[in-house]
Length: 124
Image (cartoon, rainbow, N blue to C red; front, side, top):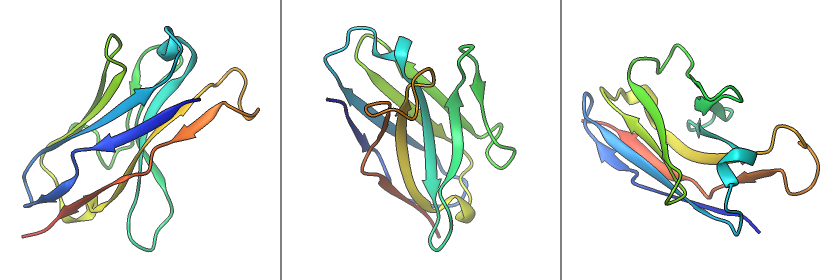
């Protein structure tokens, strides 16, 4: 069984920074070799959207709305994934979710996991 637990959200002023963390609980010793990690967010009243991802080629991908401000990273030894968010804007306010997806076997059972989310509020 896989569990993802996000932390690090909170209230920050415009222009500020936050680092979100996603702790992965899994018995697999090569978890990141199987699962592609990404971060999503869901603003109030809107659909969930991708904000950062590791691609199958090992590179990173960001939508234009956060490119240059957000950075995804991971610590394989400790099974942690991070989202560094700089120069935050009010429109970044959302619940942020960590996702682990097995692209080779998706959408079979056990190939797609989400955390419970962490609230980020950008306001003065």
